[in-house]
Length: 201
Ligand SMILES: [Mg+2]
Image (tube, rainbow, N blue to C red; front, top):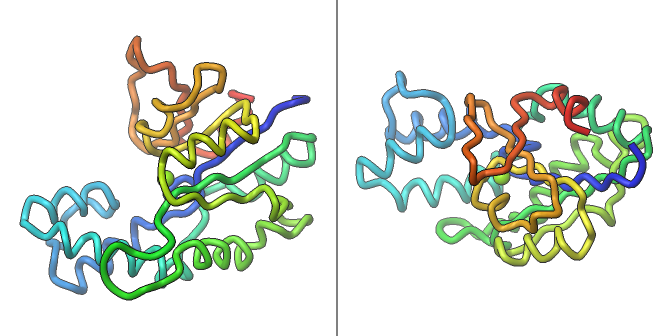
């Protein structure tokens, strides 16, 4: 397990927003209650109904404010703490604009950092990530560059488009709740639950 540097995305990889998006969209009358309670389905449904702008605004509200109610992915803290204790280096590399594109001007980077603090990411006895190993970038290209600069050996992300842009030397891991079939041209490993990481690393 030596010399592994695991890079991890933030939104929807560490943090679960599904229920928050669902409740907010329902409250604002944008979706029917029978829709699947996940961000992707809600976004698709709202775009279909001509509510893309409203979705973008909702996203700012979730990432900037309601994030404080967001939960960690299942088995996340024990898994990361175990890996760190084994001597694996862990960095978090996220990309999103500093302020929402629409709506109230929340500092999205600060909100994300506050969430990490509140959820004990920097507490050695709980998770134990170093603050200096947390990076918030504004664009996807800056994120890719950062992952390269800090020499991640593995990267976990819920977005295929991020993994597709990474160098081939990096082991790419797609975090997904769906049963993802790996096609020939997509050399991703998949992670459906955080405790499966032991089979990969
Ligand atoms: Mg993400």
